[in-house]
Amino acid sequence: MRDAFRFSVEVGGRFRWRKDSGSWSSDTALAASVPLADGLSAAFVPGAAPSFVSGDRYRFSVRQGHGVAAVRSPHGEQWRWSGSAAVLTITWPTAQTISLVGLLRHGLIAPATVVITLYDATASVLATLTPTINDGPLIMPLLAPLTTVRTLTLTLSNAAGMSLGWLYAGDPFAPLYNAALTLRRDYAMARSEGTNPRAAYLGSGFSGELRWENNLRRAEWATLLHLMDDCKQADDAPIVLIPHISQPDLAALARIDADTLAIRDVFDWQPTDPDACRLSLTLPLTAVLT
Image (cartoon, rainbow, N blue to C red; front, side, top):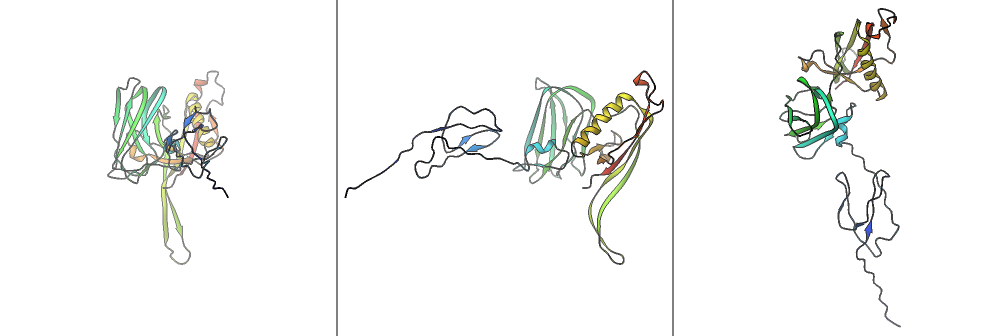
């Protein structure tokens, strides 16, 4: 009999990686922790040799149920963070016109604080906004539209365990002549049967109706149509209704409660100049219950 000893030594080794079927990275040395992208890292833990062989391939997917992308969604998804503070920075490739900033869906309560700062391309501060935290959409109109905004930062403090959803920064639809507005307060109640049954409260919101009567101009209609198309194509996304800019506490989330809308022109669409049209439209709204 002859004694036999076998051993293997693993030294070095390189790998490549890519995201979303994009281009491969350059050769990267194996290490206990290798940063990849977007906060992800790869950990290499050797086992019985040979641990890693040429041609090995690993594939995985990552789902962030509470990732920062939730601030782009109007449907209730929420961005959450660890700890009591967080900072969100948004940078646009070109200058933006912004006349209003809104935290349209959120899970913020006192003592949380929010500071929103708008900057131009040279990082000069254009405006600083500090909304008072309360229920419902937080609306922050600017005294005058800013036309050179390139960056927005949102700083949260004292906000442990809270969340932020739909964030808006832009120039909202505001026609020359206001629509006639009817508001209704809606309640979602689960009722039992029997005599004088009690009911469980599930949520509430505002529904209503917007009515333009011979006072909606053609260009305004084009903008409104684009807005409605976006809502329908985004799975019936809600809008935020602001009855008057001086009363932001009345802002309410609502959905367009119709899939067919009738538009009339007082001149029966006969003017050769489209700007001469004076349109009528009734827009029914259903509440987003919270």
